Image (cartoon, rainbow, N blue to C red; front, side, top):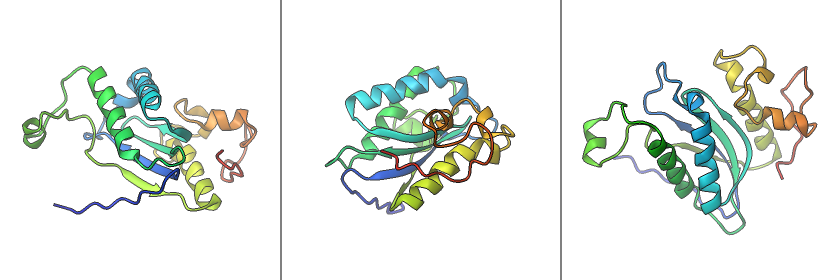
Length: 174
């Protein structure tokens, strides 16, 4: 078994990628966006965190989160969120033998990608990556056309123009 090591820094800001187990032709997240939003709200009320940027794709999501000062446990937050969402979805997905043995659903990949954001440039790069993701994957031609993104909040805050290039961010994330 792989030895996964995580860095735990109190109050840090992280970039996450969280995937569905079955990604091929799967639109589960956008088709159940209200349930996913409820899962985020549920998790935030129990284990607070700040969402700096997010994009929900049909089969995965990217998110930048900042934990409260003194808090290091981002794993419990993803566990709660995935669990809440899974319980809200009707069963019917393929479940592997190893998951069935552990009484797990088959919606999510077990692990997630976490990257500690080290400075403003790193933060800006990942915010841009998040907002550009629907274009990168061919779901839309323009960033502004994807409805499941914090891009629209960034436009409201004046960080991005309504039209034009979206490749530079000068937002502190606070």
